[in-house]
Length: 290
Image 1 (cartoon, helix red, strand yellow):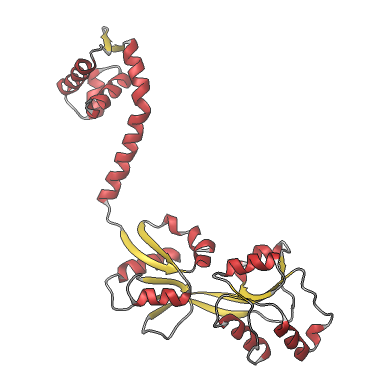
Image 2 (image 1 turned 60 degrees about the horizontal axis):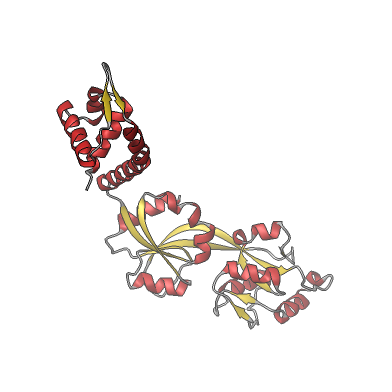
């Protein structure tokens, strides 16, 4: 088997056309460089250079061999350089949990630039809270506060919840002028929700009508992005975070049917256990997200 160091030495001699210059570039002695060259020539049974008064001139076989090994050697050097960097630097490692919506719309824009090892778990918020409690993950990103367990919370961001509908909704004229008729009409429509709790609908109803909704959702979908996509192509209503559907609203693929109804502010948090061995990693991740 050919020694890769022989090939590396040969390639450097070829580029320098001189044993002395090649030895400097390789940080080797001249006899060591000559020994590598001789060993390679003996192994393949071919002469690779002709000596002239000032430099080495490659033989035809030497030219052929160089064209065959040049690109592979460059790729190996890249791998070696990357491996050395990785081995010299200790990186943080963390397992995080988030919804697929949050990952696709926010994390994916940042996470690949983080200089750390990251394992990502997807699920709905209830599943992710359980994963945090059972130590399957160390950090929950972009969730609402919960009271199931004694977890720590750090504020992350605010988002607006808005009412959206399909373009094809037949909305009676002047419906917004009569709140009772508006509520009655809304409760008769087809609704898409994120889960059975109807948390977003309840918050929106309370803020706009100061009452509880009497709605039985027809479709419960696993993500807001799925709901938005469904409403683009099917008649119905939903309450979703505005930042997830801004493009669809701007392009009139869906609509915000009632301008008088106000958006609802919703806070998002990081969630984690205070007593754990990953606080450094958690803080590092949070700093990168800012």
